[in-house]
View (cartoon, rainbow, N blue to C red):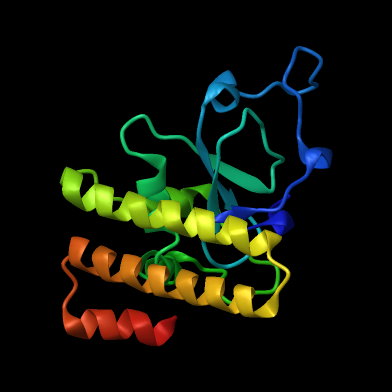
Length: 184
């Protein structure tokens, strides 16, 4: 369920899993089921909200699933959840600001994900995404307000660092960065 996920975190429990098998009325592509990792993107909303899952599941139709054989999923996740992608998506999404907006598959496919990238750049992004996944997981288990605030600050700091790396990756000028930052 889309409402049980957010950027870099899912809050699902076992009530929402589908066991794959011949008994399904509409069996899905087994590649989705067999993938060790997959990115899920919430379908409801007017912005990209994505996280990574590493279990053999098939999601309901209110989530999009991304599987890549070419690029690391954590790298793609970092790009998808970036301020730059959010800015770009807002430019191509005709449902921007609407109450019943949906993220469409064709809009996701239009997002510019760089494929010609150095190992160093990709590794930097992957490490930050791993931190964001971990921090968000920890945030769900924390009950003390001070600890929550510390984790939220670490998440914000790490997201800012990730966004700066992505701006460099796409070779944005200071003026372009300011425009992206002003709209987020």
